[in-house]
Length: 287
Image 1 (cartoon, one colour):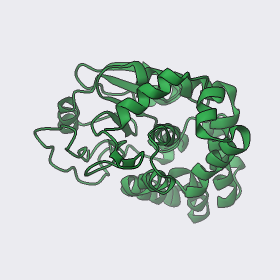
Image 2: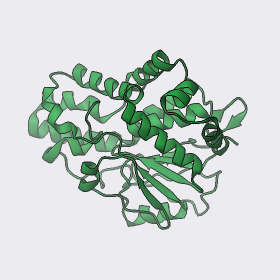
Image 3: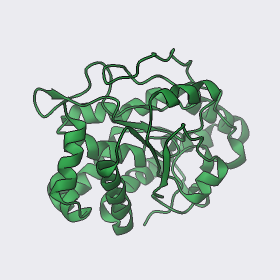
């Protein structure tokens, strides 16, 4: 098992400041956040977005599209007052927090009105103790690939993803799931859900890589702080930990194919999900 508290400022200690105000400007919230409305951009929760994408929603299972306003993905849910009001307008019924106790202690979620809080901690340690071992950016990139592989190989982590998907299938109303940066644990959960809906591989990968766009301002600020405090070489080593790369997700996918042969077998044999749960999710996801 890889011990981690993934993956943003919590691992960088005092080097990194609170970047809640260092994000892209917020788009004005639309008064009616129905299924045809795009998820709003939030200034203080920068990687918040709809699993279904924008516009009509990602194409799925041939001529269908993903239902919007059903599942949202995010980084840590710490909105300012204006963004909390926007989140309240989405009528979220559940918030699934995939962070460890250490991560939550640093900054707990600020809950939207009427939403139930569920903590499913994927990884329980802290990555900071392992950071000095990285001697190069390549080592950091390999670490990120190994994390994604562990979503397939680690029994405990598979159980946590099974719990998340089961609760998402059973719950009523819109839900958001998130980790710290909204890119690794959240990215794997998004990959599984979009795969269940039979979104094509290229679209899933493009959606995964959008975290680099949503996190660009905060990551740039983080790297600037690291460079100022520890030097350019240290910043270069940290950089692969802050973003996503297609090789990270692909490492997990390749491990899944090697161990199970298909996403369906991973869901049923690796996660222990039954066909009813998978069909519940597919029904929620596809128009």
